[in-house]
Amino acid sequence: MTPRRHAAWLIAVAVALSACGSAATPLQPLAPPATQAPAATQLSFTPAPTQESIPTPLAFATAAPAITEERFVEIEWPPAIRVGDSDFIRLSLVPDAEGSLTPTAETAGHQTQGEPITIPNLYDTHNVLAVAELSGVGFEIDRSGEIGQTLLPAERVQWQWIIAPKTAGSHTLTLALKLQFVPKAGGPTSERSVWARLLKVEGRTVLGLSGRMADLLGVVGTISGGLLGFPFADRVYAWLWRRLFPKRMKAP
Image 1 (spheres, rainbow, N blue to C red):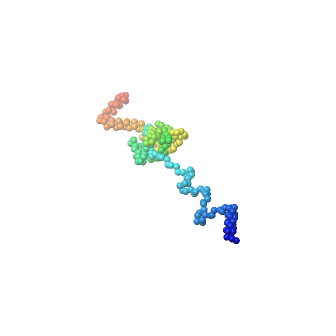
Image 2: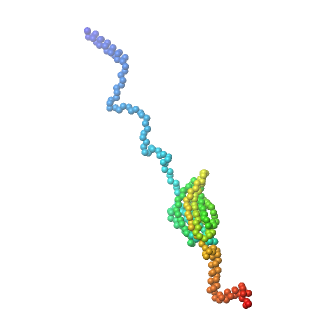
């Protein structure tokens, strides 16, 4: 085979091989190197809740503490009253921001007592009514039943009753205080009892006499004692006797 023919034969083989290669299926791309991480598949998941993200159940939610107001209950009463006489009992509800109030009696011989209390401060949303009541068997009381007064912040309210014992002996009076809250926006009224006490008062007599009779007897005794000490008192008594009983002075 001559050199020309040999070259032509090689060219024909090359053309045939090229045609066969074009008819074959294309090759797939090579896999990435082992050192490259495969593409991550996107998964749907919910992250674990942290302490900050855990919601607080309503049943365990801590309510904010209600605002309160410091007050001082002060009472004054007589430990004893003569039957037939009268005296007073006084109840006061006083603002007491510092808790250092000291009850003071208005009348000599009366007893006093004071006690701090805490009440809800609902003045912005409610009309607050303070209601007091004094009751007791064996006494005449000038005002019976419940007595209400409007309670305002930082203002003093006071009640006073006139009492008179009906009979001698030790008697018990009941003094109670409660609050009524009326919503300003409308709605039912609520009540709250805040304080109550029992007071002992003794009804006294002098020789079984009432106060007025004892006073009258004292006046008569004072006048008689003064006359007895007056000079020539015997002559004055004799003159009065002759004027009052002239017939008895005549001889039979």
